[in-house]
Image 1 (spheres, rainbow, N blue to C red):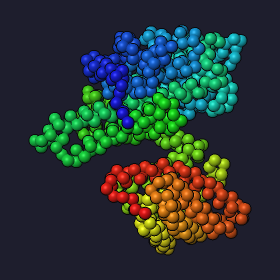
Image 2: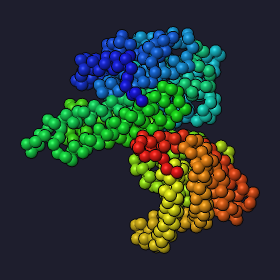
Image 3: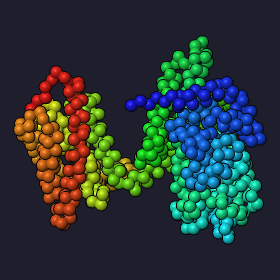
Length: 616
């Protein structure tokens, strides 16, 4: 896959790079940040003249027609240049809401002047109590004839002190955290009852606290459909999150480059400190973290550009990444620079301040993982598909790295996971099933790959290997349970909790493990036999037939044995049959999906062993 920029994106990247190199050095940036506005109006006008303010907007709106990738290009460079101009607040946040929800007349009135650099705006959506929940809004909007009256408090409004137009999120109905009932209003900054308290943030940016006391807004100030403003607000914040992640990656890259350069010039004991192996290792880690973050940023940006359903959780992932890894890179850069790394005169300190602030805005590294957990909790089917792809894909990776030994490891790992997770029941697509079927998916697949590429003997050997490993694990875990927990007063409570947890698991395990191992041994032996019986009929043709035919038949046998041994007696017969039926249905779907992966595995085998014929 080609991850390089296209011609227009390369030109955009070059233009920003040259501007920062020629006209926006660190001393100049410091002068702008220390000014009354906190940025340079002249530089902002240059942004508009160069077309940078028009990048995220469609051509119909008077913009460049760019997408998330173009915005990423800009923000990477802005991060490297430590730009203080209010691009995020004015263009991405306020402009992002207007381009999505405003009418044609409103866009002509407000959005086009923003693009032209003639109007400063800000999005006022956060409140003192809301933290990162954008639906938590106490600010109210009450109908008053043809207009509205707004009252409430907004906090940390980026560019709020310079804004001539405020986009305010207010509630017209519903409870404080309801998703419905939120409306967006365009409020002139000189409105009666509007109080703006501006301040500089620790990273050299500008923000404001805003109070609205019966502020009157006419009907023409309502942006979008009343009560339905959350969607546009949420989308603009997602754009802003990706934008600051790109900025953070740019900062991490420039901090790494500057640290490496400094280590080449800073002398200690008569040699550059960059010659010390311990520091070399730390700088290699910084470089690796930057590359990983950039790769994750590309993935999230491409999904956003395609409007992919997974774009939101990719956005959560990259924001978590830059929050955790960014702190590490920043701390390493500061420490390797020594005392200079925290001085006002050296740019490293200011890069680190901005990087630290980025972690705290738009959801920090603690909040975004929980958002991912909530996403998967609400979408169990997506979680199942993700787990299945990782399981099958991981098996192929093990195979490509370690050959048949990798397949044997995959089988042993899967059967251990399936035995431990087997007692847990969950509901996917409305069907109640055991987690064992989810973590069991790679076993039959790996056995079929062994059968196809290495023959019946190796497949049968792997079956016995998986069985033996499972027995050893069960015995060793049982022995571990016989060790009494620590009675040290400092650790006794913790030790007893762990003992109780393992006791709970192993109380279920013997029956489940016995049923699982019995079903595994019989069905896997049958799978190997059936695979080669079908192969004897078809020769080297129709891999999909012997893969699916043997797997579906052996899975039916596995499910029947497991359900009768494990579930019948634990639950009533009807429930046991229902659990077995759901389990088999999932196995049929898995068997169909893994066909793609078995062809992938066979093509990999033939590529690396062109001289070796497949054995029957």
